[in-house]
Amino acid sequence: MKCAAECDEIKTKTAILESKKLRLNNSVIQYTKEIGGLELSRKLLESEMRKLNEVFAKNKTSKTRLANDNFNIEHEFKQKLKELENESIKLEN
Image (cartoon, rainbow, N blue to C red; front, side, top):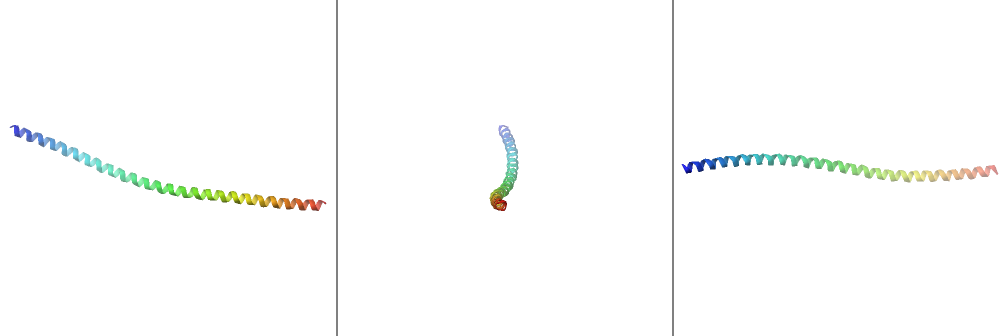
């Protein structure tokens, strides 16, 4: 009788442990899926960040080029204005 009770107890503990193992395995599978999704999201974010950095760099280059162009145009305009002023002064004299 004692042996039968011990066997029943062992079977019960085994069933409980098997159930726990199944739940843990399901949790591991779920976490693995979540990790895969997070890794995919991270890769997509890295790709977006790379694109944004490229656009930022192009913008910075364009800004610098435009500033230089504006400076040169302004300088040329001032030079032309001085030439026209000098011509005007000559004509007045």
